[in-house]
Length: 179
Image (cartoon, rainbow, N blue to C red; front, side):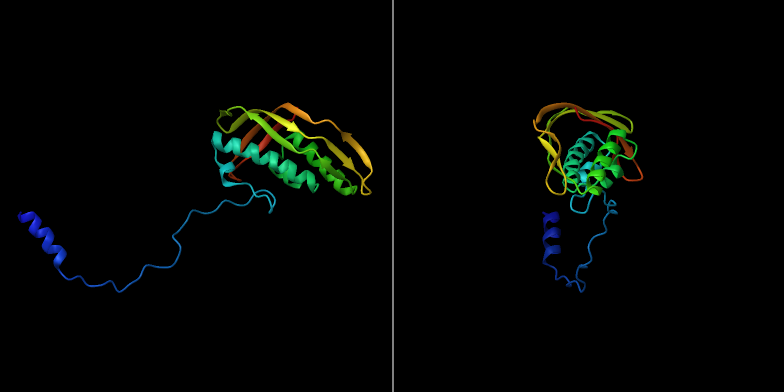
């Protein structure tokens, strides 16, 4: 009973109001990641974690990036994320060649059918996946057909090898095979 009396009397005492209000400044946050990817398709933060979920998110972003850059066409962003990947450099070169000649791609969108669990070995990850490639054509500036793969490829057996870059706080493509 004595304890409850002490507690109750403490609540009954008059309290002085605070003369300061909480600050309107935002709470300190961790430094944001430097942007990667084109301004209209930035790499999401979930693709920039050094774990299996981050590697899979990077793969999904990579497929979106290939589709995005083919529509422009431009290989710059592909080279930035796959600087040592020979197939990535070939794809980037094809996009750049098309742009410099005034050509454009029509179709060819890639989508993932299935993705296996990433195999992680320290700073390197391998992921096998199936991909669908829609029919694709390369057209000149006047719309004349230069090349075509008229049939879609419904399930290309594919793979990607990623290596972690501490400097970029991101995965980079070391190897890429589509089909």
